[in-house]
Image 1 (cartoon, rainbow, N blue to C red):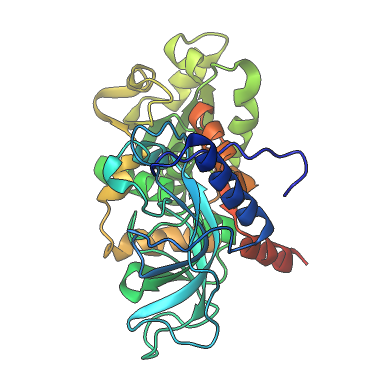
Image 2 (image 1 turned 180 degrees about the horizontal axis):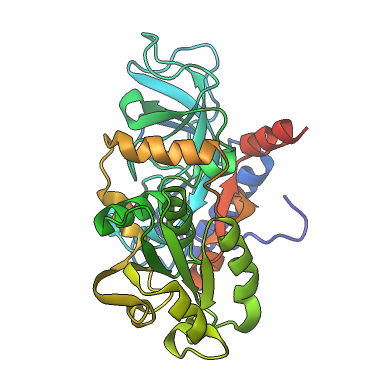
Length: 373
């Protein structure tokens, strides 16, 4: 095990004494950290894929009191020589993002025992037997939100559920392209803003807000970003990142609600926005509405919009992938290990929303090292 780390998982899905459940969960977490795959017997998964190998993290049963997905060991070893099941590819997961949608999924009792994780990236290690679909070495992501669970090490996935990405997309960006950027794309599509328009984006410090700023800017749309300043001066570093991402002006929420200290002059010079977004509720829509012209559309939006995007919408994927490959779509990330998923969920639940957590498997850490070497 890692020094200084505690195993605090408990499982209550099975009718076993609580002490045994806790001990079993601790063994699973140690297995996840140390690479041991035989901590306890194999489990069958009611998950999205045909097979799961190594350590996976599954949704706990409703009412279990778990605040994060719990570890489970799948088949003891990854088959090397045998071909994947017909119509499937075998993959090694590299990284997965943690989003607000992942938090909401914990409350759904129907998901118990399914592999958790709505976005992530994996590397194909064995192609489909017929040679169709992505080939070994290709990076793949879920074709739609929730197509398969991403908090795991290895799996066989239906070819129709994965989509290939160019190798130019960094692993950490590929792991986080599936929720916040998709939701931002959908929100901007509903606003119908055009080149030269001024759009007001509230909650610009959130992952969805960051993506919306970069998407709008890349289209030639002017952006006035409003960020939460509930934590005092902590909004200032984010303001610099948003300006790098293309925001024309960044203001704290308090100044948007009560202009002063020169901000009134700034707003007069910029003019009123033609439309506005309030992302994830981080900045109240009242702050956004005050900066939008009378009759302009203002939307309260959340990452749930990502679930409504079409898996066949080539415009969305073409734009997101092109921006990611060119380095023009980057979220402010905090990198952690997959085995630290409990801490990741705790931090995501209590965070103000600026830094999105991305969890790396051991294979993903090796991939990062090889690209930086």
